[in-house]
Length: 542
Image (cartoon, rainbow, N blue to C red):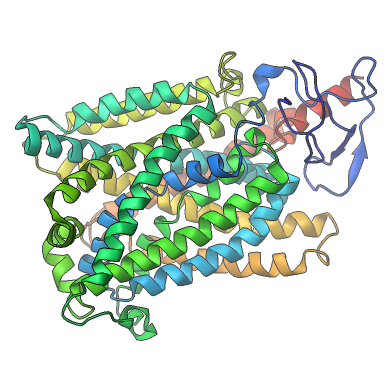
């Protein structure tokens, strides 16, 4: 079993401590063709791509199914259907939500053409920032690394607010126990942290079981909704383009694109897959396609169950309780009780999925010198990025405790856990991911143009350009409507403070990259190279 990836993107034989490459590597920044490295590993005529096994994630741990389930778990299907969809219908007032998922699915497929192709050339657990570094330069890559760390941390820790509130609600409903929201949130953070230290294939099995049960239940109630429609019957009105002409279009766009977050995480696991050149791109297209189909059909089924003419008013009255009310009428109390429990386990799956992604970004950054070197080492027993996992757990606990301490509302009031922790953090994270996807789209174009492959990759570059421009438009809408996204008034300071956190991180990352270029040019030079950096070091020392 190999323990890393070669610079050519293929896995070759290795001993227990080092994986070897063909002796060639792409240039560190422009990637213009291979340059021969002169150093050799003793007696082999080949060059080690990393210094030791503790600097590499264990390969051959994930296949197509395991990787697909791991990335789909981040989107928390039931949480999206029960939480996001009623909000878009009731608060934003967009009847054409199903059509929005189709449109965004097309945009993200366009994005995936270039992004997936990039994954064949660059295998790095710091996917977004590595791609941006290889296309737009190391300084941009340093900025992207901090934005990615902020975005995925924010999205992960935000879910603890919703998770804690829902679990405390279950205790109150079924056990008649009063439990503050932060108690289950803290317990979940500890459990997620412990699982993060385990082998990724074990994590994938946990996620797989949870996500499959969750999706099965959603499919069941979708069928029930269509089989027993509202007063308007089975109508396709929600797919009519005229339903997208209301003033809330931009806000709905922001909510709906957040429902797809997760598919772009596939390249993060490239070093741990059995065949990264094949598996990563396959999973990305499967994840986007399945998500678009699943989301569009589920949103449509809700509109059918309530009636397209009534869905906005009904969702506005019932909020997140809409789904549970519709299922209880059609499938009974027992099914709805199970759905409440699976709503919580689905959130736990999302917590674990985001945790794994953050841990791997921290690992990649530590390996390349953007974070202390300790983060760039893995556990000797499981091969997991243990220190990155610990960093994410500590961050989660600190934020949850901070919100708990400042929560002056009675138990059962969702103000702190949902309206603040979940809403604020989730939207900070969503904005960060949208900006990263936009930057990655343009980085793909720059990468292949610099390699002299623009002609061969012309179709993918056009797709990347269209996706990049569309994602920039979504980012503009997100910043413009941030007050609506976080439930603040138009004059609230939150409308600029919260997106400002992302902006400051982006600018701070550019400054950090510029400082590294001046003070530590060797660290700056290997940003985004991953294990290839060690190959370059070996060549330089010989």
